Image (cartoon, rainbow, N blue to C red; front, side):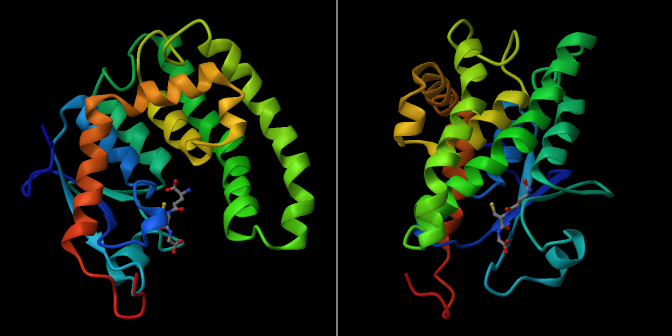
Length: 227
Ligand SMILES: N[C@@H](CCC(=O)N[C@@H](CS)C(=O)NCC(=O)O)C(=O)O
């Protein structure tokens, strides 16, 4: 069941249209997914990525999504939205002190210690793939990423989620790892690959994804960016 409803306290901002390659990867997926897991109602507010509105530029230093409102409270950074939603729901963030500390640590670990390298990998293998520097960088980057994946592979070989139960740590890590979905790099780490698939198979993930994609279907591409 979609938790989207027009009169919800929580507002999550995303884009009304993005090019096909970006669909399903826009980071408002993270708080949407968290709301679906916890049964927290939210409303969406959609911006034009080619002509960003003042409300987005004013609320996010780099004019990016997601941003979130909760009544009068305004937040930016997808990680901050997950931590904020975690405070509202024990399903998302366990209350036991050690489990809670571990979940928060993994959220930051996903965004600080893993995501930057995977972001660079997408750059090197897709956006800049024809550049000489990208070809030169790829082997050492992949070697480095493998070192970041090794401890995950070990942990996830023995358990389904990063902690004792599914938490915002898994929303963070699964959405980060999806950047290398379908790559040999991920296939070389079968337990981690299975973990990503497990996350993506959750009904809450599917609902969040469907709701993000539905917005793109409702909007025409901006005139400056035909498909
Ligand atoms: N670290 C930020 C990254 C946000 C981000 O990269 N947003 C992308 C969409 S996934 C965006 O708005 N890109 C358009 C732009 O930068 O102009 C977060 O996690 O919230």
